[in-house]
Length: 142
Image (cartoon, rainbow, N blue to C red; front, side, top):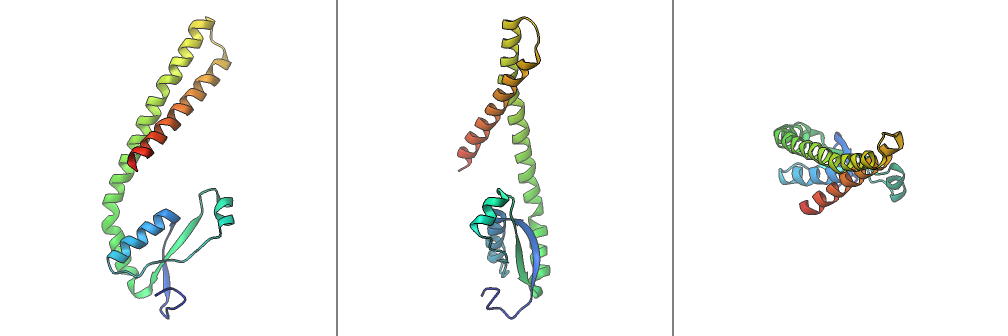
């Protein structure tokens, strides 16, 4: 049953990103909650939002409290996942500094004195190293 077919009043449970909303709707459906994504943005809206578009998840009024209860039950798992992700980002940032510091040290060794422009290639190398680690981490997860 969809929102248009339903005579029940839907309440907004959460506003979140599209992938998170889809996963949450599936998870709530497995628990017997009739959750549904309320907003269906056009492709143009998604492009203009640059990946930051938020959609609302609606549930029937009579199932709102049970849906909130399920979300509270899942919160410890979600917190553990977020903590693990933040550790990975911190570790990636620290290891991305190593090649940047090597480039900065090489520039200092070659030039013999510090110049502010030496920092630019070091920052570029740090950024590229961080992005490469993120790419390989993401491909490993899939």
